[in-house]
Amino acid sequence: MDHKGHVLMQRYELGRLLGQGTFAKVYYARNLKSGQSVAIKVIDKEKVLRVGLIDQIKREISVMRLVRHPNIVQLYEVMATKTKIYFVMEYVKGGELFNKVAKGKLKEDVARKYFQQLISAVDFCHSRGVYHRDLKPENLLLDENGNLKVSDFGLSALAESKRQDGLLHTTCGTPAYVAPEVINRKGYDGAKADIWSCGVILFVLMAGYLPFHDSNLMEMYRKIGKGEFKCPSWFPSEVRRFLLKILDPNPNTRISIAKIMENPWFKKGFDGEQARADMETKTPSPTDTDLSFDSVGSNVTGEGKQELLIPTNMNAFDIISLSAGFDLSGLFEEGDHKREALFTSRQPPTTIIKRIEDVAKRLKLKVKKKDNGVMKMEGTKEGRKGVLAIDAEIFEVAPDVHLVEMKKTNGDTLEYQKLLKHDMRPALRDIVWAWQGDQQQQEQQT
Image (cartoon, rainbow, N blue to C red; front, side):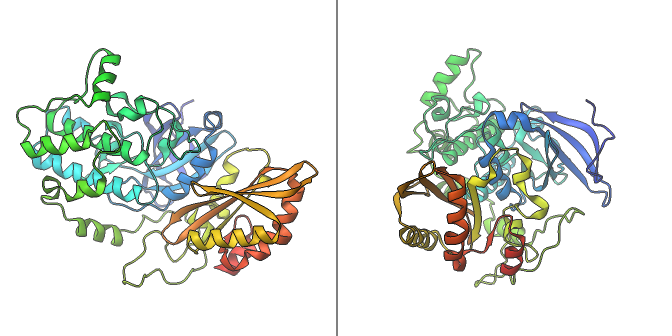
């Protein structure tokens, strides 16, 4: 189906196809009211449901709508129909960075500038619990001023699945850029895998070719697994030493982003303070789809720095993209919505955990274990459909804002709903900022 000229949600006129992948097609589009150019990623909802990633995608979209960084393509809004999900994103004019590399290797200073911008973007997202996991040439774009913009942060989860040990499992990514632990299908840490990919990108920028390349795929995998690569003669010795620390096949000894940023070669000409200042003064382009919400008060912290992630016109559930205008739960037909309840809190996780434990004791629920941020609670007596069991999981969605998901994992849904409504909600009132879907409660809280 050709989307060109198609008007989406009476707001965007779709233009030419910019690119496509397994899950999505990306179109150029124009906001009919403001004339602003945007890129719209169209995702087939059926495919997303098939890979079982609903919760993770919801969480990552929630965070991505809040990310403001000069080197990251911004996600403006998320919309959906019965069959499609639409991500409306910043349109980056300058094309792919690697079109430049195709013309030949870059000068050291130019390569370093792009690498600094890449690391700055990756560090910013990691600090907010979002990992890319598929950093590769087509995700590195240039704006009209020649600055790097990383696309698809958070949305790469569409090729991912998570296991309970907190390590990622599904192999994804472009083979030449992925870390050895991803290829080996061992559980892996998203942050460390991203660092490896950044190292491959730095090598390519400076060499003009890949560090691990072989026409035989298994041979290429073997080289990646051993971290077996040779630097060309024109690489300065400090770059060689630096790359050996980044392209370390052992994720446990691989250099961290904090250490990368302390490296003398990396630091040349890097103004971290300026990058932060740019971030703090950057405001998102206004679009006619932004909804107006009651003020949640001042967004200036004690140090007098502006908090980027919580503009004053957002309420608790706009912050996690679950407000009336951006309710992600409607994007997916998941069946029984009554099994889970979500609330936001401005309390630290220790306070939230302590309060949930106290309430559980009072309700004669056994707190079984706490791992990876999940608290498991179980009733002491058989209900209509066995023993009632509830998981509570805490996510940081912004500095000082936590999302708590309470999910029934066993027992009768009606018993769970009753317990939630009459016992848990009133008992947790003083730590809750807003409950999802409870508009009146949100308005009172904000």
